[in-house]
Length: 223
Image (cartoon, rainbow, N blue to C red; front, side, top):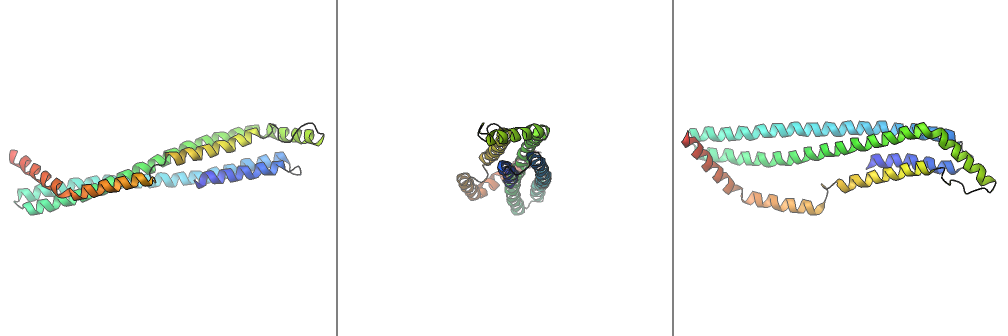
């Protein structure tokens, strides 16, 4: 996802800059926090958009369910008026509306699932940024000490000094992988199977309408 990519580009760019001995580690870490907070703000806006999409789809599902009820009521009205052909047409429209409602419901569920996953991920990243913000002074001191040791031959630069930042970068990579693994909507095999079932349902639609028409007639006769 672009959100994770932006976070990691900011983080890895600043990690690379810390290797440059001419750069002030304190200022770089301050800038890292500012950059990541800026990306977090943008990501929250993306979350608001995602939630808005999910809410709009949920509203469409409610409207589609109302349409289903409306077509069934029209079928009953037609039967009571003795117009079986018109009732049959109403039931055909009902089943078209049902297919559209089910497709919209799946989209709404997927959108809300994506929004929930994004929200959970942003909460994790927000916690990591807060931790970095609280420890940046200590991390800066570790970088300076590592540079001094490197200058005197006392040790290799970066030994332990950047572990926390590298761990955060790895954690963001892990979060991205988890989101991609959970996203089954784009699975081509699943899409193919669902398309085949939709085709079967379409072919059997006439029989379903006749069965429902018979059930409606029986229900009205029993009243």
